[in-house]
Length: 195
Image (cartoon, rainbow, N blue to C red; front, top):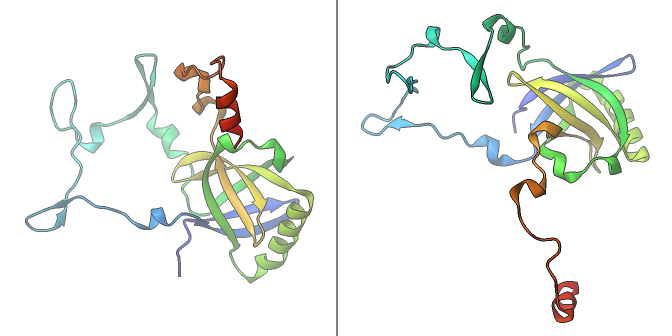
């Protein structure tokens, strides 16, 4: 039996639905560890300062964001306010037609299952309604201490959660300077492309 990646609650109207999220890809199940070859013991990661070339203990480390070459330190208190993964809340932001979601935005896929016997009936109702309307719920949630954007929608056999990429993380095709448009094609090349 597979283990759920995380448990969540999604509130539809006034009804909370307990859910388990299973990764659709089996790649998450393999975790490679770095070992000391001679004794086969896991090794710890050593953090070194690139400027002083010294090992930096955990209590002297901090988190920061690079903003145009300048480091902005994130306060430890702010980081501790972020919720843990257990009992994540899938907060419904709004409903959308599935045709409005572009596949370029897709990231990771999870299968959602009812968390317990109480959740089975509301899960089935929501699954049926979303499938009948070809709609989904845009949701936000926290998993592994990171904020995520996603869409919950119905597949043929149950609910799915697809994480979506945030707009500010996507690059436009044109950003790479790939000259595709405007390339003249012969009639033979056009016929070949249509085959």
